[in-house]
Image 1: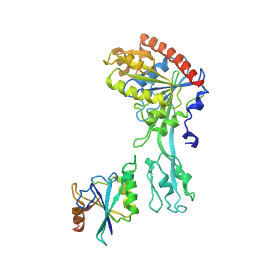
Image 2 (image 1 turned 60 degrees about the vertical axis):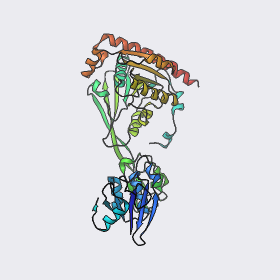
Image 3 (image 1 turned 90 degrees about the vertical axis):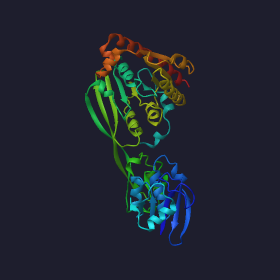
Image 4 (image 1 turned 90 degrees about the horizontal axis):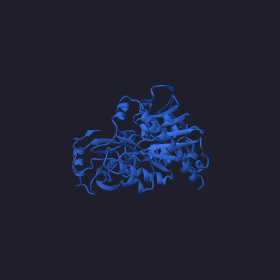
Length: 111
Length: 308
């Protein structure tokens, strides 16, 4: 299973970006191999409109099953729902590592 | 929207101008300088039929001065794609092409966000399986009124729409071929203003002598220069600010066509929703002189452009 998280930095100790569509960096964590990949979302970040939906499309195409994020807009959320990506809300200021732990402990709520 | 409307038709129009057919746009940069008042007072004193287009479609207000003589109302629609699921292969060409990012596709039938679509039909053109059917969506209305010599066409944008430009374009399609038309442009200097003043033969900028007024005025002057539209300025509420517009305009070689004093009599008429030229002989004369000067200016400057 693949879990995506928008990040402010490029490692697992970086805080979660409180924006989704205009986040420049995403980490995709693969639970089957416990490895992670950092992906660059800067093309979508600078769009005049549709940054949220395009970012959603981008991570869907990366076969992501779960998104951990602080804030996802209604249009992006609709796209993610249609692609069966589960979106969980992460508290502001959480690091990627903490967010994954909270998810594993079942402490996060669906958006 | 016709495909041909992509190119700037400005040059084409230049040859067609003559005494009885021209379009004068009124803009300002800064909001609240008195565009609508100047447009309507000028239109009122002309002794001929005049067509006024309220292109401030996000907050049209010309009709308030003219009373509610609604003669026609019609919906403005734009193209919106309908996707035939049976023919769609989910290739995503349409979503890749879409400049507005209104279509989202990840290998399935694309999802449309209708309010983001500008109606360009690009998706329909690029679809390799002809799976896109022509649908339409209402984005606003056009209301037509007549009051005395003024025929008013007002664009009204629906709440929640992303861009007023398609409504402005539809509104301007109604500009008659053989008459004088005035365009009341929205404030600012971005796309809606460009769409409003495009193809005009002359641009009147309604300004005020405040630092904000002159700063925004300069932006529209630069815009007009790029669009190659001749410009004249009206200084409204003279005495309100401490800047000097005459000195300012000298830098750009732009004529000052009219100065309207900062006068309580004008505000009184305005506060009742009346035109000052209907209330005061003094101001009727002021606007009659301005209208004459303006028409001369347009003829002179528009004529110059014809020979280019």
